[in-house]
Length: 319
Image 1 (tube, helix red, strand yellow):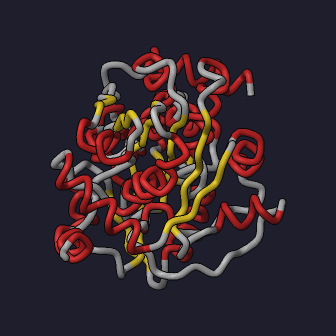
Image 2: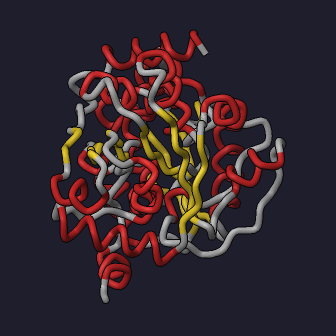
Image 3: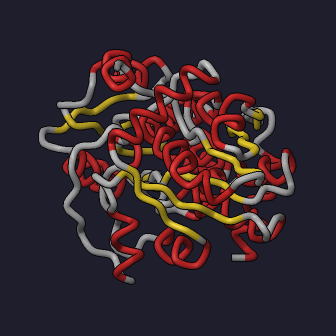
């Protein structure tokens, strides 16, 4: 873990100004509503609208000359694909993003606009991942995992380094968890620089892959239902490096319902005038749910992204 911490701090210095230092804003109305001092980490204001640009930028930064010439491959329909596309464009590296044919057209158009080449694959997201991995092996290109890569995790961890600098006496930080890359990076930093800060991992009740794996003590396939938090949905790869990191670093786990996620998205629009995606709503919903236990304490909520189709957002927050 010390090596990962060192790599995160190196990335924290090396990635500026390409990776934006996102604000940690005090929310007056959320603080009054909850009885906590609520700080919002604006990862939805990062380039491409999510924290994923951090990990992609660090991975591209560390490629050697031959790897740069060959280009990179990944599979994604959302935040990860957009982050890789932009980071590769800035680095002058070709990027191919595999996606299922069923992916939302607006997301694919965004990836193309950011410079990525999109290859559509029949079937679901898993088919796209398998096709991307096979293409990377066949073509001798680097495959960029959204979370199962220590260099990607080091990039995500720069968010934690910023938190430590912006508010070094946080009592807790709430982070949504999918594959575990973001929380692994943030927690690695805070355990060193702010050990009193409790790491609270947050999941939707409908998609609990990493949560269920951690509870069981091993990685296995978990059946998931549809969720507003599509950014955290999906299984955990066998042998994922994030599993052990999450097992060691997470202090507390919380699950929230779809209605609690919708409510959090509505509340934030009213209090702070911010539109966020469902994954960010999970972290805020968890903070609202546990607020009675953090009265008078400083808590940070990582708003991990804002990339949600407008119609889906409006449907979620209506009522």
